[in-house]
Length: 56
Image (cartoon, rainbow, N blue to C red; front, side):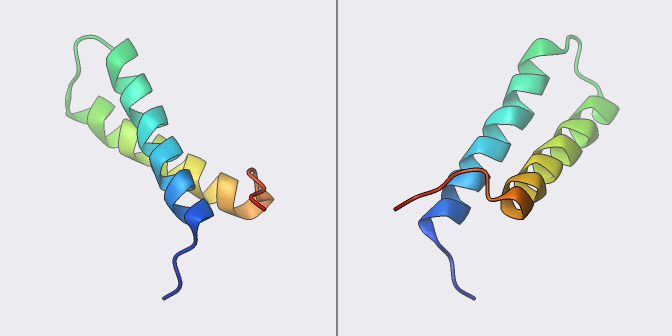
C-alpha cells in the first residue's frame, strides 16, 4: 500500500474535523462519538475523491 503525503494530510484534517465536532458538542454521549468518527471518515473520503489539496 502506497501512502502519500497528501493522504497523511487528509487524515490529519479528518481527525481535526472530528475533534472540532466533539469540542462543540456538550455533553458528549456515545452517539456523538460515533457521529464524530463518521464525520471524520466522510471528510477523508470527500477529500480523497475531489483531490481537495494539491501538493507539488
